[in-house]
Image (cartoon, rainbow, N blue to C red):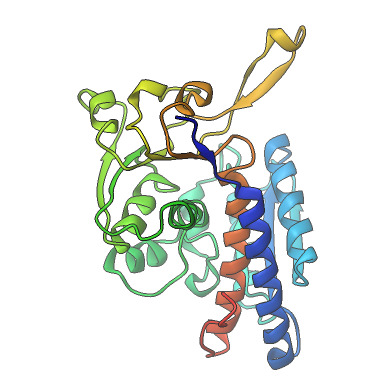
Length: 298
């Protein structure tokens, strides 16, 4: 068996286009396009690349992008004031504080002041509570992208067995809740799970979000399963030359492709979907703040 590659770039481009179309419709009602504000603290290279991509795709979708950059030595109080200023700015629909923050800043304290109605990353306590209770709200982008790609691959997820490897508040826990919303049966696994390979072999859908390069081996995968690899890890690649590196996921791709029915590559799988769902959330936030129903395009 050779797995079908799930083209996250193609699906993300479709979501971007839909968000752009919905945003254009909202602009005619609001008198302005939806607006996303991104706050970047410090000079982490990976964060810088990610923020630039967010800004580029936001603007390409016809929405307004506000980029706020501050040096790493900024105080926590100053970051909180930036967020509070964005909260009261009626022209801003979505707020995203890029993680990680410098070590002296308490990320939870910063997230706590984001207006839940503008929490397009779905990370505030209010957003998490609405997800847990099954109430409407803005969902975390990466897990939402995972569910969408699984649906594109397999159709209805009702009754499917899902194993989520990783229990972070960013991916693992919200992914479990989102798959449960689709009537799947979900198990959250982690590094201390007894006989993890055996558990993974029971899964129709595997979400690998543990942050360990190629931890999930090919013979862990149930034949025909859908494998969603959230991991992005840079490892040494001496075969490419001295000092060279390459990106790999949390799944040993070359092994898993021979077992899975569908699989996301790294890069080009889940990564592009995260920004696509961010744009979608920005449009949803703009509509909700205006008292409007979610646009049909989404």
